[in-house]
Length: 393
Ligand SMILES: Cc1ncc(COP(=O)(O)O)c(C=O)c1O
Image (cartoon, rainbow, N blue to C red; front, side, top):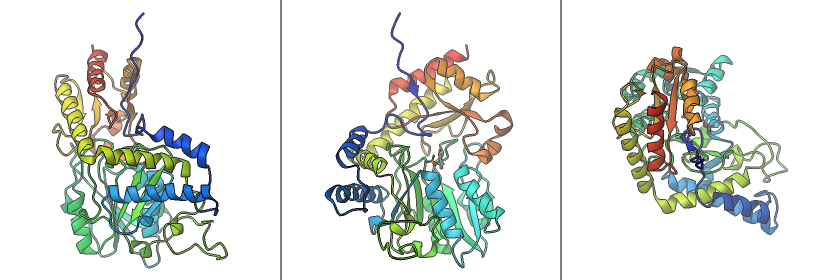
């Protein structure tokens, strides 16, 4: 009997696997050599752990093209955590304008905090529609939704359903002119496409460390434009190892928004991933992303019974593909059939219920998503295409 081929991981939009070269070594090095809590002791290990965390902040700041201190990078648990801080921090602040704008292609990690704020009477929000085939947002829709009491525009950079890249710079110029804080959910873009918070006039950028940045799970961050923190409230308070005699949270960053011990182990892994990404360069990662898109789309064209939800053009998208086939009414059955061939995908509503409503897939149980990443090889994409053909024979 021949040795089974290794499984093909096609769920990079959920989390990347494998992680960047150097990540596992960094985790082992940190656990066995340091282990200390950054900023909580004067001994060498604690100081060195603090250095690792600061190095990671600097790398993240540089990766997103931000100017100003790296302390504006606030570590959290994941992207949802960072989004909660951005959304609630702004909308909950004293004298804040309480109306927010988001889109139908945004994730539950934006929609649910907004629902909660509305439920407790702290905010209202408008959801603007996007193109029902691709999910592309027309910036004029945001402009039309702006009200005198609009205090935040929150949109995702890349849809986790259709993979479309939104025109974030155009929207940023508009929100900057209107003086409205602008939060971008970069969960599906960092590591896949270039992000520059200065060029795109972004005020708050939330991202996971564990998806396109190829770091460990349990990492994420919110970057806050210098000065914007003055318009924010804390979400959580607690010990910071600084100003311990004070009854209230320190007013400087990152301590103001980072109570408790950070996930130093995970951050050490993310720091190693960032070092690898920097050496690899965004240009190379983007070229790889484009090549995968071209290859998958060309192959899918030869399987005309599949419906693709999203653009057939390789430009302006990442390698995240939602599909359906008439043979598989329940998209989970397609995932199961693919898994039997060693191909790992994700079916359902992908935490984006309004996106699936707009695409018409919500009453059908959603769609099946294949999503690729930096580690995906040409051969793996070929195996996915062959698998799609095989399960429909
Ligand atoms: C667009 C988008 N935003 C936010 C999130 C939440 O990310 P995390 O799992 O790191 O909380 C995801 C996760 O899939 C996502 O796709």
